[in-house]
Length: 440
View 1 (cartoon, rainbow, N blue to C red):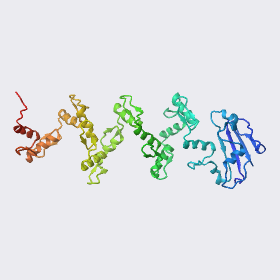
View 2 (spheres, helix red, strand yellow):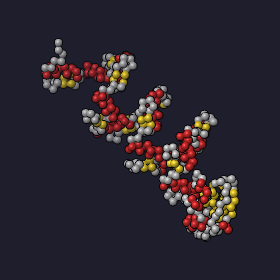
View 3 (cartoon, one colour):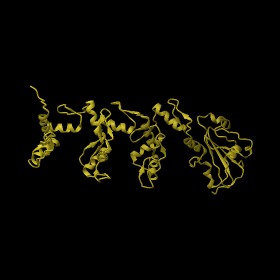
View 4 (cartoon, one colour):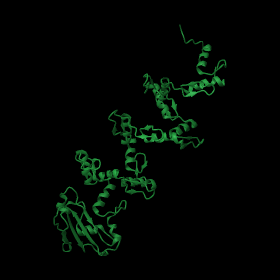
């Protein structure tokens, strides 16, 4: 059916059935009828002066019909309801202008009704007229407030027929069902990647467009998702709202808490398909798999040397530049890597967190514990190619090789005599100092 050029206006008040009176200017033109038990529709024609195809004047329309949005006297008893009644205005000047009647002045987004447009504008203005009486949190829509109240009441009226899991919102249940069905109805037109939820697709599209609409007011850093911005803000505020129930350690992100809890539960959900070794984090598994594949994706731009892990590359670069960005707050000593600083701090604190399960001896470094455990296991991984003798640690093996090579790297500054091992040089130096360490 071809739409008429003559403008017409349809008002839909979502309320209880009630006959409402119109302004005297429009009484003779109005035809009122109850469509159903919840909608009263009023069709008005001739109340709007003839305009050109692009000359819709909202002020004249509202003044002529007597609709002043957000004024209680216009709606009379209708405003006694919990929500402002939905008002849908359809101005038909042909298909070209039907959408133009409901355009957001901020982002030019189109809407089917003024009520939806009004709610959308609140996202720009920040207005949240519906507040929770329990916690004071405010919402743009009354339906959002209704769902939020269930957080306090614990009500979860929507249950999954497959696994019995319950949800606060019906939309959450709809999304959850796709876990069982495997349905991913939202696909990216650029790369074809599919998603369970439309919001996930919206966030993914910004990877292709480069759009980062959420910016930090403190440092200006921009993010693809609002959740990323929320997490980032905690860097500035220091907020850590997720505490561990086992050790009371707190975290700024829920995901980090879940990973941490695996330390207490012993859960290691990521296992290597080549050797069966399991890991707490997916990143740890990805790094481990490079042992089998030999992949070294991180390379030094100065010398071209490649590394399997990013922290190894950074450590290497610090050695080349001589940079030691990690300094001890106690003695001022500087280190190339953060792990070196962490190990060094134990010199001051006396902490020895690595315990031998066989004899109970403790160590400040994990590497020292591993070397010590070879005493109990009898393992000697370093063997001499010249004589076949084996050793527990690398330093012993290196010292032994000097027997065959004749190398004596440690020389006395007083007499020039050289030694193959450092402790022999220290013993010799007592001849010059007169030091006698051992007394009867």
